[in-house]
Amino acid sequence: MAREFQRGHKARISDLTAGTDLYVGVQISGPGLTFDISCFGLDADERLSDDRYFIFYNQPKSPEESVQLLGAQAGDTESFRVTLDRIPQQIRKLSFTATLDGAGQMSQVGPGYIRIVAGGEEVARYPFSGSEFSTERAVMLGDFYFKDVWRFAAVGQGFDGGLDALLRNFGGEVAEDEPAAPQQQPEAGGAVPGFAPPAPAAAPPSFGVPGGAAPAPAPAPTP
Image 1 (tube, rainbow, N blue to C red):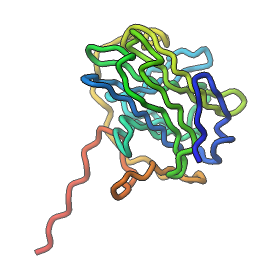
Image 2 (image 1 turned 180 degrees about the vertical axis):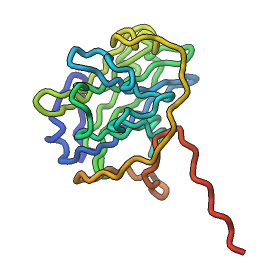
Image 3 (image 1 turned 90 degrees about the vertical axis):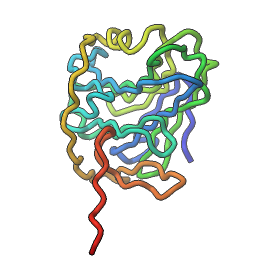
């Protein structure tokens, strides 16, 4: 059974699962609202000192693929693959965020969540709703942070301003979009439990490249 978190609750990830190859799903929606869901890889000073660890739609993976953007699946608006034992030592926190793209404010969002899935089984969930916010246009949903061991914190902290303001908050620079890096098939993880997204109602998808890659072409029909 998944452990349910409330805002401010924290736990060691090892208390939730023995796995280190994890799926992180975010579900957030609202009438007429569009969201950008991102992950910021921060250093010990909680700064984005290496912008290659800003994982978003236009940069869907970190250099060593320890954090990968997977796209919408299994009922989640956006999802990530996080391989904890591949995260480099200079990255001490992963902050999962949602920002509004266009008009609106966070008080308009419906019930949503951020969840952790290990080996296809949900092990942690932090639910939230618009009633927790007011005029904010960005919200920090949850963090993975390293303090002796990797831990999870349910944050639920919103503030005015969109993605640009969030970048500045973490010490990043706002720049023009750059072309996305070429996609590669990620290596299979050997952690137990191994990586597996939650099973959807339909047939479960096989794990593929990070979100944004084109689907594989169908095989040619046999004469």
